[in-house]
Image 1 (tube, rainbow, N blue to C red):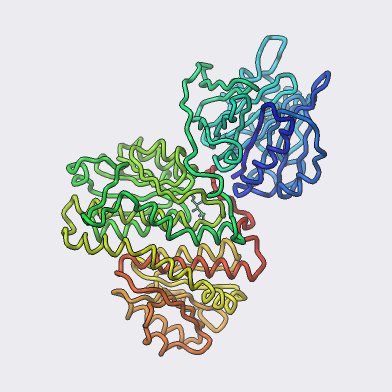
Image 2: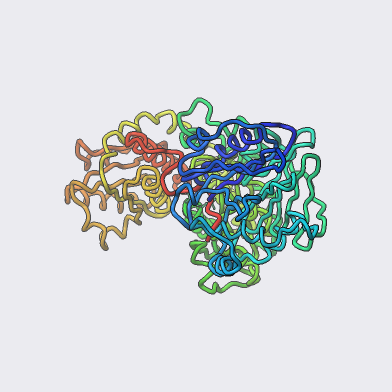
Length: 619
Ligand code: F6R
């Protein structure tokens, strides 16, 4: 949801560096982009290059010039359509201050009115432009006010969320600040250059030493110094944090798309999320980040998962797992609804926030609400040091590594791995699962990565099926039990990258309405594996066939019964056999590949689907 980058240092090519960082941040938004840099001279001046379009297109308009100080932005429009005039950076009236902003300024209408009454002239339809004019209002060198003082006074008036970087032609510095939207400072190798970024991926080519800002903190970066202050201008002592993965893990390498690479990484990701936590020989599960006394675990009366999108689908699966394995009542809630429905919570309720980025505004808001209402909280997060990772009382990192493709794939399987570990851990402590049963589950769990690999080795068979089905306008996805959240996830993948309308449904509900849609032009993707509801879904498939609906089905290897009821133009994708509770790992992968190959065939931008952004940092 907009990406910010900035550079100050000895390198005269600041604009080039900022453009490079922006292209690594493009998954956060890509409808327009821009940079502002300081052109030395007497007086020094701010130069701006910005336009509608992707970073690469905007960069073509930049004529290289020496500069050692630059800020940049890649946009996902909230206020004001994508256009040159609405693209960041935004300037003040005198064109001496430039700002880039990620977030939403909720009280911008009132602030704009106040500033216009004072004579400020606005040119864009954005909320962000008020910030440039507010800083201008407070910035007055004659009164010995520094840029950071002006920024501090300006942001004190803002309601909403922001991650910002600000420059002035009068001072050689970058001022960056955050409230609700991530800002990470990167420290150059010899400590006389500094970077600012919305995430760590963009910093990787330059440094792995970072200082993530907390809400309310302000960074003041010059060529040889980095100071962090709080809103009262008190100097903060911050620790340098190292990025734990390398540049290669954030590149797409030999793969055509990040999404494909990330789908293929899943066996490794599941292994890494399990590593050290699943003790196969002893048949036990250890979760260091969830240090809870046995008594505390036994006193949990209810678990509520809060998340959005794909992470919510992982949470829905978590509900099934926790109820079956640990026998604790559980719910999965849209984070965007949870906070505003006055949730009933107490100290025996455990709220589990699931998020790949750890920065999703709705999930953060709900987590804070849960804490304020006295619930215990756990975060299941991929990005180390992110807001949810820091604000949840306990945590499980999922070790998926950087996920760049906008459509989430490996983060889902990693989250699901963490949820199995948590359910088995709670189940053992609460004595709802015997040592014997746990050992059997742990052993099969350890075999899952190689079974996922087997599906990936057969990806071409799924491509052939996609080549037959990519031209439909609509799709129904059916699954039941553990595979109902998988059906939702498969449908979400298809619609977000191929723009084919797809609806996920619990298979048993089909006869209560959706069956009316079925005809030869409305195909169904059925998750039809050998579990306890196999016969029921078989009946649903028969009902669809009786209405001339076409079927693509995920079936268990060697299941000949399905083939008997299907016609020649129906298709099946076989997956290896496993224990019923582990099927979601194996059923979701063909659905991810199916969506990928449909989008590819349709010529869509797989890694950057229209209208979407990877990290939704506004409510
Ligand atoms: C779908 C997708 C989104 C995210 C959702 C939550 O492919 O990526 O639905 O799952 O925006 O994001 P996180 O997990 O970062 O909180």
